[in-house]
Image (cartoon, rainbow, N blue to C red; front, top):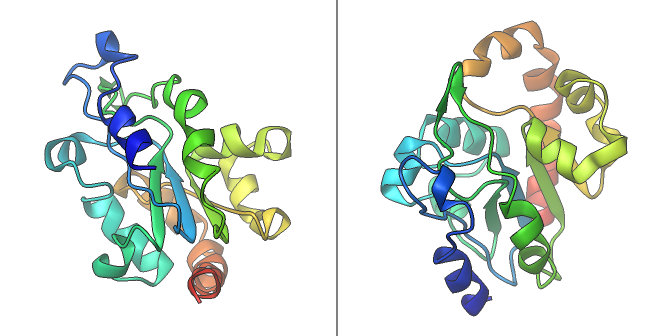
Length: 190
């Protein structure tokens, strides 16, 4: 795994499309118990090199019921984005994750994780890639059907502040899914 992470760290497959240049950000270990498959790092994470080191990460950790120390223990959590580098700015937020990363690296990262008890799919890009035809028509429908993807996956909306309106419209998420998510995380880590 160390050699693989080193290879990923020097990846330049899509460098011509990256406005800030390549800086692959991923965290994984063969003993990881939970994989969190997200979208792509934002500018703050690009700067620090620490996955989920932003307000979205704070909200995600709250949903999971874990503190920063536990979240960054690689034997507990593998933090794997769909696109490993900051993709650039779009009209209404960051651009989508680069499509090269997941097919190039995900299988090699996940295969050695024999103790993986849960994979959390954060956002529509991770859900589309991993659920494929099992994904519902909308992110809301997919997240609402979360129980149908257990025990392998739990789909979540992105914890970005841009989704505050979605969270208000879908109060069932924090009332029902978040407590169940915390229980699934606790189970996978025990």
